[in-house]
Length: 395
Image (cartoon, rainbow, N blue to C red; front, side, top):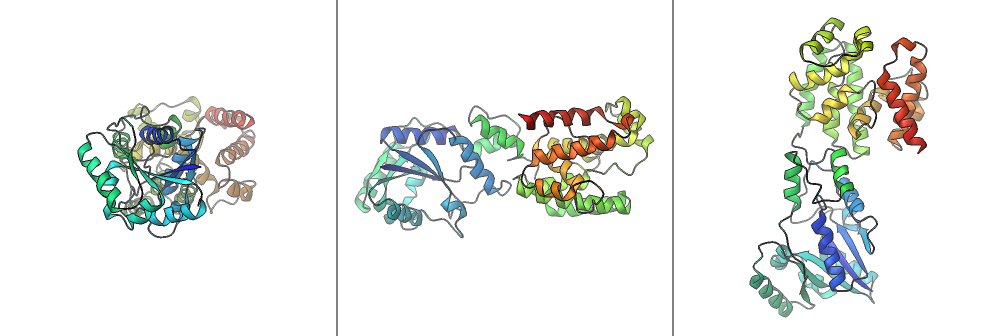
């Protein structure tokens, strides 16, 4: 067999990565191309705001259904720095009768002599080089000729029309909230949006501690303890579901920031700021604490991240088609360690880490059953949300 190995951080993976792999596969008649997802590359760091597991999941989404494309995560889970010569030695030992082809960009080729043991890599694999937009082809050809003489093995150029697309450009476009779906797989883009990746709103634990101090002053003691529980529960769930964990913690810290103000003040804030109030919210103004909390998050605490504000706004009622952070805060509010009166909490707490959507549905089911005892208190949004997830899970 002819096996291609295409390594990279893929942060995020985009259409050019796929095009290069397909061009190499077709030109050199490769049977398989493995996307070798880097763990901790020795020559560069990944964006710390993006969980490594998110990079891996995006690669899975990008190559899903493409014939001959597979994932290799050995470097991803390897302890310490990842060095290509170690991986290529492993491939050689695993496939002694197969031909190996190592795919790299022209920038990597020009720096090849700085790699650790480049002679081992070229000994076990033919090096396939993908050109980049603006390349000096004379310089590349010279490097190929020099390396062919210096190292054992072959160096060949992939017949590929280069473009200027890069992962860094995509990260910048997403951070600036300009869409980039034309350059990446639709499923990958949806994943980026759902997991709030590459956001320009990055929070620190120092900021969380500052919010902690603010909430201790603003909330009643029991509500403050609950808030701490929700914040830590949100962090834990975010780690499990690959959402930026500190962002989730910020949302958890602020989810009840308008809980301890008067009903009159909630209504006043909404009316002054054109925040819509439903009939049931006028009747039971305590239901407005989510909407007012979202407003306070922005105006009082400087939170401009729309996902955080939305999660705060819907943390009590939920809403149809909640995004990932909505679900995390909705569930964290219900199952945080201080809760002890809700039914089947042990089941819900386990379900939250295995099937988040089902956990949301089960919470809604229990909430609707409880509210049915006082029908005039039922918020229609809660019923709509319950019906949405009931139908979704039935499908």
